Image (cartoon, rainbow, N blue to C red):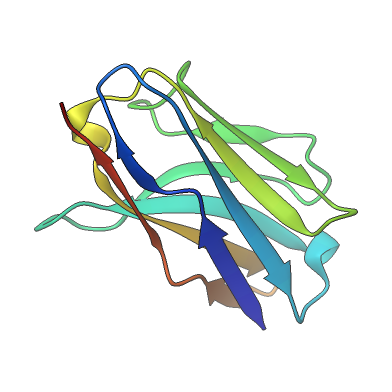
Length: 116
């Protein structure tokens, strides 16, 4: 099983980044996919979730209207489009897969830094 995140980097406030998570080794369509983030000295927090078929999404209040989660079940990928980035969005971003039986898989994380 692998979840491999990419797309992180350094961006100025107000800028955009698109994170990608490539999944392999499990039945992707059987899993709810989520993005989490963890800033230095803070607990890991849920950013966004998308259901198996992509029909429903949920977002943390802090990112609503700025971030968009989407999945491609043909390519086994889930993306997080992040717009209007703020310094407080700086964190390591993680991809997670959760099954109905609550089996979980995590990626290794990708660093996002928002700074001028």
